[in-house]
Length: 148
Image (cartoon, rainbow, N blue to C red):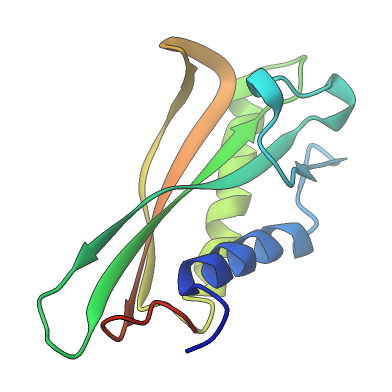
């Protein structure tokens, strides 16, 4: 047993991979936010931007010696004003997909796969210029010990 939940370590490695990549859209550096912006509002000078949050986890107890866990991490992409926001989001999405594909399972996961991409919503309203990428990361832990 250790002091670190495997899901926490994967989430941190996921964010580090994106931060270390120095992503730019149309030569403008992408801000990787540490926390979700209040009310989904990001100052224009920080755009384009992205942030990562854990939206859930599923557990499967199919084997006696291992619990299979699926961590769901969402990447929120936010476009800069001006021009076609969809083009900026497409470029940002491509960069994120390429970076995470190259990262593999961060040395901890069996698989990392993109399961959906959609326009983000805030209280049911579509947020044009904001896209949500949903990733599923599958890994295993021993029963009764979800730590590293």
